[in-house]
Length: 372
Ligand SMILES: *Cc1c(COP(=O)(O)O)cnc(C)c1O
Image (cartoon, rainbow, N blue to C red; front, side, top):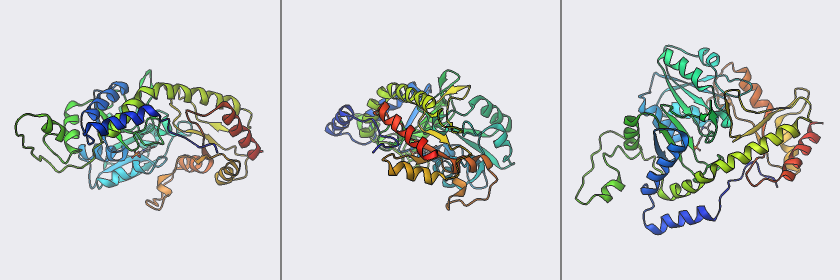
């Protein structure tokens, strides 16, 4: 069986997790602090605040910005549903915008089409690792005086104009779910260029406490914490952070390999008439977290037909990125032609670190057979 993705975990991660357990400190502590510093440095950001997932990170980011009932948050429907859900969690209204057919990302045009006087923020998604055009979206949001939050769940290791994607962003949320390229089992990070926001985010993720449990433990005298505002429990554990530190050290190798395999896919897939695939935008590079293809118009079957055909031959692919507005949780009528087209005609092909060239050849020849 060829899987769609497989985390690259080994003895080093197992040993790091075991060491955290043996230390007796398993909740948020010194390893989380170390992982925050290391990830922020990698991401070109001033501050990293570890959290329990990208979803809780997006929720916390909107909460920090004071977004709530009556506000609208522009999101791409063409994203994992957590992006839209974040707006719901703070009582705001997610407003779905369409995306560019090549990058799968929001553009100034698609955002402008849905702006209203109630728009308070935009969540831009670096979808599947492909960066959105950060400068142009920043310029639009600045002109309209609305916040721009990066959903960088998939994008660790992608670049924008030669810098790490989301470097210097005021708020970016990252995911360490096993479906992404760096995993801690579950987990996430908020990066921010604003040190005051980082202080407040650290407080908010830990019940609104004025000092962390780790700091209280480390102090010599009696220290009483205060609860300055209503917070959350969105903490990461030291076991997760220990794994994350090992994974972060391997990330450059993971991305280099994915990019090699993606380039090989580009060459091999050129044999299939009318097929289109994801590639780098002119302003940056993708980490190819998702290698998606769009079926030829001439192919009469559906994505499900192709997925079933692949599965019957031992290949596990996935439907393309979802359209959140079509799911029952939202069922929002919206005129999003590119989103509908991409969702109904695209699929994600297997790509993982341990993949062999022979396995990749099998995927391509099988896909070609099915589409013939
Ligand atoms: C995976 C993903 C999320 C959710 O990340 P979790 O860490 O699982 O909460 C959010 N947005 C996008 C675009 C994703 O791909």
